Image 1 (spheres, rainbow, N blue to C red):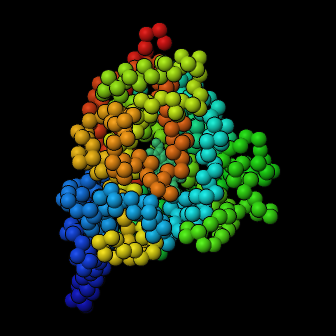
Image 2: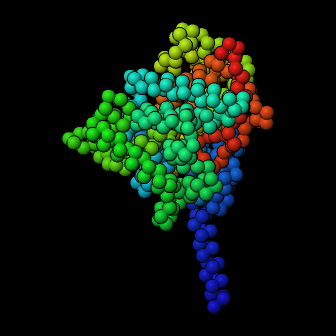
Image 3: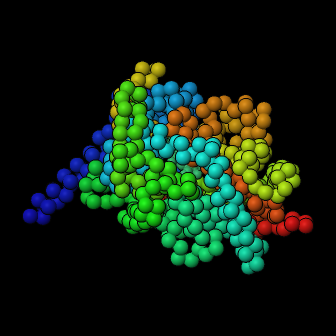
Length: 511
Ligand code: HEM
């Protein structure tokens, strides 16, 4: 009996081992250079075990193949292509993007409410959603909404004053998250979330924390979903806690009812969705990804909630982190801070002290500070794609449908071949003529091609007024104990520093 159990156990272990390594000859068979993987974890072990920031794991792999336009690796048990030649990246993101329209494990998008949103979608579904959501972010819509951001920037100023009554040291990621969360909620659903006036037990903050929770368990679950989606969903697991969808469902349905299912004069995101009614039904209509047919998607409750949560999630964390890390770099680089302050003072003199929509175009040095921050700390250290139709690279290598592609954004941004002295914060490299010399497809702060960040303009509309609000009154400096090099969080999708960022705020003379 004992022998039989032992034998069964050995067979089971052997079978699991076989499953975990059965694809490991994928790149060898294709004659593509690749890094030898370890069972279960492939080449991403440190990241999957939440010991290393994803950008660094992929950067280390890239450094092993400095002269290869692309190479193979394994994310857990699954093959992944890592292209590092800008010409190949251009094919994937732009020229042949219809073959790479998936985000990763796209066949499973329908398994959770939240993964039905634009970010996780692929093919015709992605195209039609994108076509319908893009007008939300048009210049005219953004301009009309700017007064809401301006109001939030005044509240940010009050919040900073309140924090300074307690101490001249401020943990900026917390303050900036409250600012961007109030901005995005005001723009999205016309709700005053008031996280800046009172953050205690604020339901939006709780939802934000649930979406980006940096626990080991959540991180491990996210990797498991990407590696074995069939088993993951088969045993009833979910990436996102169900209370997020429940909360936003109640919120959105409440707003729809309040507005009697008709657009209100507010012209916020919810109104724009309500205006998409065709023949009494909420619908997304548009072209297929190949442009060969018309596609209609009914906007049921789940899709509305997925869309709204997608905008909420993408809208606050990204901009808050960029603002916080931008202030951190300016605190370390006094000369850049001087130049940013000089540009801000000149701008405010022109506008009589008012922050206007035009700030996103009229402060090129501050914009360069923002972009240089994203170069050092790209919001997504790796941008994912999935092959959605068999594709042959110019070299003749065939990539089958379902293959993952990891675009190594962090590595490109830190590669001395593309950026001289890459670890140095120097906004001038992304300013004026010098910016024009940056090689295309080596610096993509918002991604590139038809799938480029849809909220790019809104991101600038939050970040630049954030910089203005702080620097018009204060200088920033590192707080005692704040390190000059930051450790980055391995447990969340977006790049963020472990333990926040503490800065000293010094009131400028006469401000
Ligand atoms: C500093 C702030 C931000 C940065 C650096 C950033 C960066 C990015 C990047 C790199 C991508 C992936 C693009 C690709 O796959 O090629 C992306 C996608 C996306 N971003 Fe942003 N983002 C920011 C702010 C925002 C804001 C404010 C919103 C608005 C709600 C937003 C909404 C989205 C959405 C919905 C996608 C998915 C687009 C698609 O798949 O078609 N982002 N962003």
